Length: 570
Image 1 (cartoon, rainbow, N blue to C red):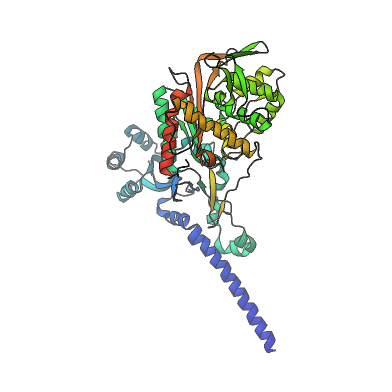
Image 2 (image 1 turned 90 degrees about the vertical axis):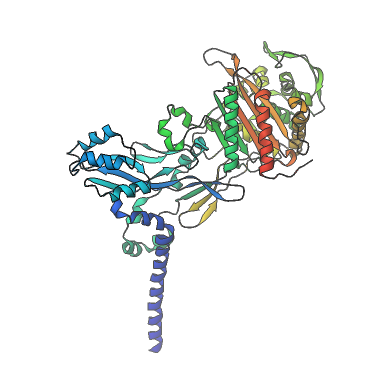
């Protein structure tokens, strides 16, 4: 008998503890996880009927010391409205309110005249201080409503990368950049806050304990380093302004793991006032969505393919006459001059079109094609940004040797800058393809967090090839770039410039006076931590990328060395 009584007591206590556990779990979610949301909704005197306050997760940048810096968050303020039928003295109301905030007089009285409409908004996104001051005036017919909106503390910082939130019909969600790519994680289901507490517990215990509505909702921590991003954008503006380019862009990436420290485009736009932008084209990200003929920065990929396939060595020589004829068309060096018998190093030092064409003939067009496609230049990289384009590499299917020769120096094939950066990173990291990315961590609303993982691609070059092409590109900086005057005494830097003619889309061929300049480099060269890429489109009154981008590149290298306190490697 006593044994049965003890079992009953234990059973009852078990139920009590189980229910208490459920209550504690739910209280944790209400007070800790959703505390801020409920706090805002507690201001019921400021919220109009049937209003759901905007809610969304944050985007964070992360500085070199691991501190989070807000890139996209929520700002709280007020909407001011009037009830024209209850407004006793519209003139007095206008006078008092306009002393606190700027009001368009004609708009105010036009709305005040709609006496058959009980709700007319006269101001939005009013600051907390001003909103409370207006509310304290206690003007008959004037209402103050709580409001939250998306706010970008950096203004135009990383604007094309972060993206923004906007309406498309009745749907308010991320429209560009990271806001769009991670929209499912950043979005919030506000309805979950109004479910009856006890009904939810006892109607679905399993869901209450283990499957929270917000289990996929969270904040995104990015790889963007705010100081590096700011420096890059200032440098892009300098380049663009000095050379009056149509557009200038850049990327700073870790070639070992694909983390992007900075990604910038100039001109940019103010994320908090994107509606003022005249041309919506500026919202897109050309580093991911645009395809370009990249010019001579592709030559190191060709040389690496020749080395890796065994078709050449660094000491292989060929006779450079200044031009060659293939399939009835003439290919010339940039200056039309021949250098006589030279080795493979001079192909990079002097950027010789005839030299990389020679390498293609030595390895064979099909082997060259295989290497180029293995670099991924015709594919999407998988970067976590929307609308990524694939490269245009149909010329690599041609039966004519000419198309392969022009591809070897970056003409006739087009690729996205981000795909170009991924391919070039393989030269710096031992020969593997990486996944360029901006998302680093998801901080879920449940309080848990998860590192975002990315799978490295296959090895496209032998490690020994990566070391050899790096050695050759270091010699480009030490000996050839600006006559060797920009080489750094204590740091090995590998780099190459690129100048490409821009195709004439209305006629066959290329413009004689329009160019795309590109530049890439990485350091410390033999254990690269940083790869820097620049692109400027149609700079005026200048022909070569070495003139426009060498100084900005070296400035960026020096900044990164000092900012990250990079140890000398030579």
